[in-house]
Amino acid sequence: MSSQPVITFHGAAETVTGSCHMVESGGHRVLIDCGMFQGSKTEKELNYRAFPFDPRAIDALILTHAHIDHSGLLPKLVKDGFTGPIFATAPTVDLCKVMLPDSAHIQEMEVEQLNRRNKRRGRQEVTPIYTLLDAMETVKRMRAMRLGEWHEAAPGIRFRLWNAGHLLGSASVEMEAAGGERPVRILFSGDLGPDNKLLQPEPEAPTGWDHVVMESTYGDTDRQEVTEARRRAALRAEVKAAINPDGALLIPSFAVERTQELLADLVHLFETGELPPCPVIIDSPLANRASQIFRSYARSLDNGDLLLRAFASPHVRFTESVEQSMALDQMHGFHIVISASGMCEAGRIRHRLRNWLWRPEATVLLVGYQAAGTLGRLLADGAPIVRMKGEQIDVRARIRKLDLYSGHADGPELATWLKKRLPVAGTVFMVHGEEKAIGGLRARLADSLPRERLVDPRLDASFRLGHAAAVEILDSARRPRLAPAQVGHTDWHNDYQSLLLDIQAEIGKAADERTRAKVIRRLRDALAAE
Image 1: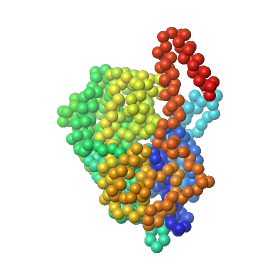
Image 2: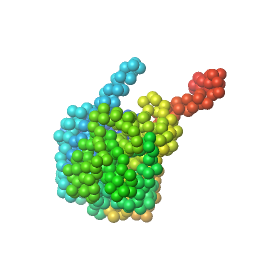
Image 3: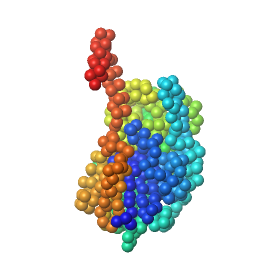
Image 4: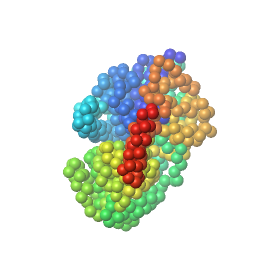
């Protein structure tokens, strides 16, 4: 048994962020991804805590793609002592050259602002997770790999990459790890793209596995068939409904690929006369730099010619400086602003939302997955009031959702992808999904594999891998960093903010000062009773 490889799920377990899986074989350790946790503050605090393993003991890392929930803690890994190579496709390496420094810049800037507030409040200062120098050192460790070519990650562990159809450069990882008479074959799906994606082809990978680790983000979702015409018709309808001579359409969007897809479709609708042209502002320095990389790969992308025309459109402009971004507050007439981040948790979209959420003439169009506990999820769920940097904001803007731009396969597409990979002799691990999504995917796969071989691992859980069903390694001395109830859910920070809003609403409804005093007294009595 000791010769069998072991897999441990250090992220994206019952949640959609923080992807990080470790494979150990013959005394060697390889990581698949090292992503940043997003969502509730409880989950995001994991980014600041020590890794549950020694980074100095990791031989190599294989990166499936550049999104921050898969790559965002790489600089911390290097900062904490990792010295091995980071393998990825060439486009992923190029995107990380702009995304990781941007992530470091945001952290340094936000920590600087937080420390100013902490100093006024008499609280301790905090340090950023990593710095720009850490990000630059990380990029030096990256090695560009071609699809379909075998490479050794560590003695006894080899791998090759397959197109995952999710993002420019995204890949699934085929791995063979020494395990007895023959290697144990493991397929890591990475994030899988949907059918009919604007810029990417459909995912590929071989068949016949011992174990599969697959994403389940939209495992419970069955989208109507997504065609190019239907996607553009839906976008056209949303833009037309949002047009207001004194308003704006705000689109929180991931800076890499989602922004470029939206831009290409908007310009197509302008060119064909299906929408009246209007200013489209890409308010994200990262999206600007990422677009330069997409421009360099355009000839190899589906619809690359359309993307190049979109970049050159007279209706499109990119902001770079803070001054250019702030000047958008003075714009008159209807316009569209596409700004990072996609879950409204950081970046310039936060300023745009503070300026527009309280205005009924504005529309906010959510075009991506919104993790539990994020501002985007609160808006998607219909919150009438939100708090941003301690400020209460009434949500009067129209909040709309358009799921047809998702970079993730839906439930039927995920099930089809797995069925094309069969047979699977051992276990299918369902990761990168919340509880409901995992349950939906399990139901879809029940006719392909016995239910006991469809496993949703807990955070930091380990399994021994052979040529049959995986066996969980139970260690009472090792405690997971978060309890299952804390993963993929809102937390006490969200409850606290909601309570503050409820208190303010209750006091606001009070008819006079005497009634307000009574409400406050009841609150104090409740606290004293505890």
